Length: 75
Image (tube, rainbow, N blue to C red; front, top):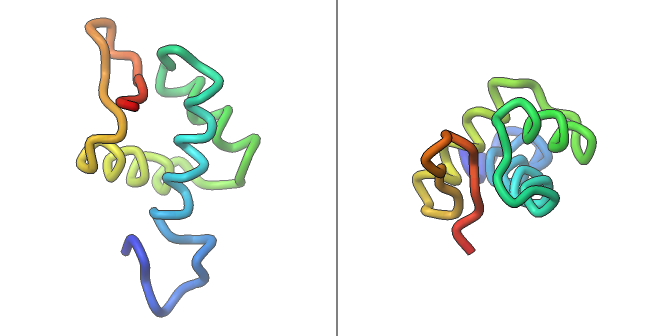
C-alpha cells in the first residue's frame, strides 16, 4: 500500500505522508484536525488516507506526540 503497483502514485500512503510532513512544518505541535486541514490545503486527501498516512509516519518514527496529544515531528 505504500508503493502500490496498481494505483496512481498520487494515491499512495507514501505520497500522502510527504504532504502530512510538509504540513507539519507549519506547526511546532499540531492538533489532529489542524494538521488534517493544513494537509488538505497542500493535497486533496480523504480523512481515511490522512489517518493511514499518519499511522505510517508514527510507525516509521517520523512523527510522535507530546504530553498533550499533539503531533510533533521527530526530526
